[in-house]
Length: 76
Image (cartoon, rainbow, N blue to C red; front, top):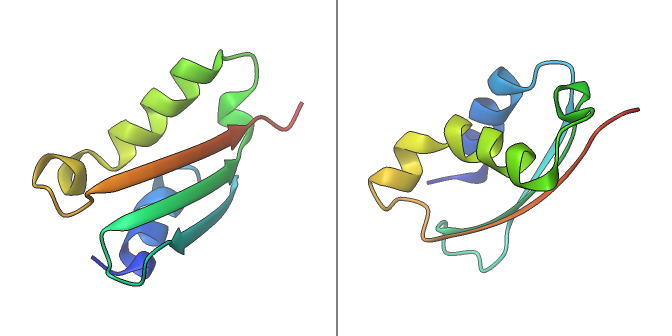
């Protein structure tokens, strides 16, 4: 899966946020995502990561994404 497809999924899930996607190995299955979004304001880190995992549920479930590193923070 190309990083741009993940970018689109995350942009749709967090339209007011800033999203960066990095293909860590160049193989198209190990990614790091960094998201700053008001959707995370007031949420504990685990809840923030659950929102990201939900946005990427399909590629995570079918094994397209083998490894995912998540960095999140709110805007407040």
